[in-house]
Length: 109
Image (tube, rainbow, N blue to C red):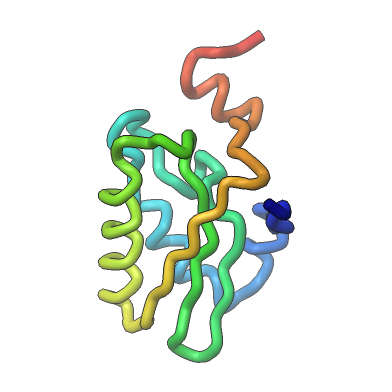
């Protein structure tokens, strides 16, 4: 399985057309961790062609029990602001929490 070329947060955030999308993604919370999926770093890419939108994302674990619920939430939030959404799940590279996320979860040090 080839590895997806994950975009950096700053790269995604620097595109003006992504601002509204990112704002919605920040309202999608991982039910298990209580942190939004954007802050967790689960969004690997945002690809759009006018109103057609592909969100490339992962889960904290391939066996995430809330995965389907999170995908439905992403689809619903972005459809509500006028996009036709396709969520693409990738697990390579696997998710690794940033230092900031580790601190939020109490794993500092």
